[in-house]
Length: 144
Image (cartoon, rainbow, N blue to C red):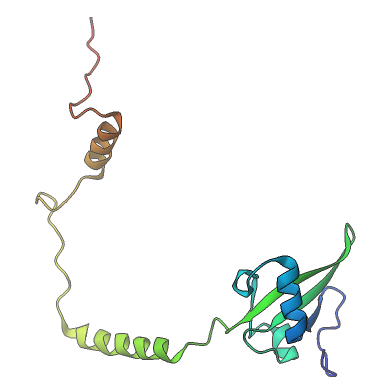
């Protein structure tokens, strides 16, 4: 880790970026593809401190009273807060269409008595009859 390390606290696990050769050996040893590894965001404080690039594999060494030291591996992925160029274009297009829709009338809702309004109890009753294989309504018990 870097010289100006703010991650020296005892509860913060050690993070190391694997070399390309180590990464290939690890994937072969574990029998997994790179996309099957758990992920860690590039804007994670430990990853920022390491200056790890997207696509690199990071070894995280943790210590536990129960099992001692153990290693886990994470794939560095783009930060969740960063948007790709296509996502930025989509967001700006949506913002533009939202501005145009400000003056538009709100969508009409179906009236309670109209055919479009659906009673959820009625739907549930129909679906339960369909599951039983009967299209007829269930018989009510008669009082005798």
